[in-house]
Amino acid sequence: MGVVNIIPKVCKLFPGVTSAVLHLGMTLVAVYHSFCGNVVINTSFEKAQGIERVANFLLMPTQYLCDGKVITLDGNNHFEVKRRFQYSAHKKIYSPLSLTFFTPGLILGGTIKGIALLNPEVKKRHLALKAHFASTEVVPELDYYREVGIDVTDWQKGEKCISQGYKRGPGAENHLAADKEGLKAIITLLTEAKIPFWVDCGTCIGVYRHGGIIPWDNDLDISVLINDFQNVRNVLKQLNPKKFASQDWSGRNSSGNYIRVYIKESHNHIDIYHNAIDPIGKTVTYIIAHQESHFMAQDWKEREKRQSHPIPFDVIFPLKRGMLDGIEVPVPNQTARFIQYKYGPNIDPPRLYNEKSGRYEKDLSHPYWNVPLAH
Image (tube, rainbow, N blue to C red; front, top):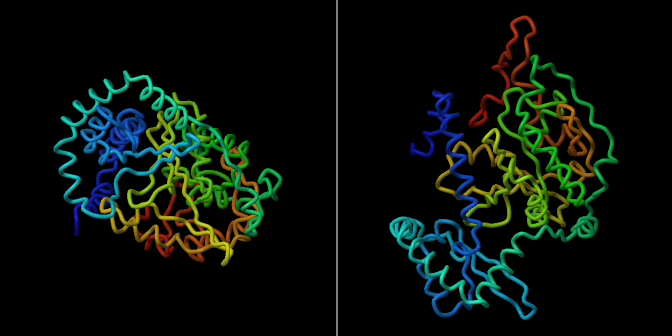
């Protein structure tokens, strides 16, 4: 058993320590994502000349570790952004080399890049690129969705999803309060932009069972269609930067398939999963962004595979309205069937609240406890 596969088991044994480490770790991850967004340090224009080209060469170790981008300009001065490096091969060679030369490359390359920016043309180009990355433009995909047979009727006009009414303990409605504030902001932005989305995974189950968050859940989840990746990225730039930060968590062997919103108060994330469209089979399928990653535990990969079955359009669309602790949210059309596609036929709670003891008691016969990383 590798170290990566041992980590989840250690986390279960020491939940308090794990929580503290995660809080610190997520803060550092937020700093990393902010650094990756630095236009000067982490981008290279394909046709750069002179000392700008020298700077980009010296910054290669930094850009390899930080998913650097190469920029091209077409005849209309439109930016095309691509990954500078391919991560599908030779990572065992390039990663240690990049770590070795990261600091000297960053210091020397960053200094020379700063000097290059004294050139008015270079500075103008980078300022234009910064404005491009800050764009909140949305390119509507609704016509395409309708063309392939997806009913993208406004979810706010949908039927109401009635929860099953399973009880929770006192105060359960206050669980993940800061995260729910972030969810409300995301719902407002995506709805105004007419981007189809729905609550997914444990959040969807919570709406269906309780009309609120599952008491032992630790995050919030929503889903969108893969065609809207850049639209979602652009829209989320309008979030309050003092409270939230949108981050691209797409896999290094793929791109444009996973977004997370960092909640600064709770040091938690809202996951925004992406789903591929099969216009022939009339299905959508959850894309596992890090399926090929060596840093993800095998148990995690097995759990994610269970949720990546193709789901018919009409199971999800048109979207209904559900309630999540007083927040109106879009849910899949055939909510129970949708959850069964992801988790199997038994979608009853694996824990039931006992009002006498004030505790959630496990139903050990429930198949949930056989799922990898069940908690």
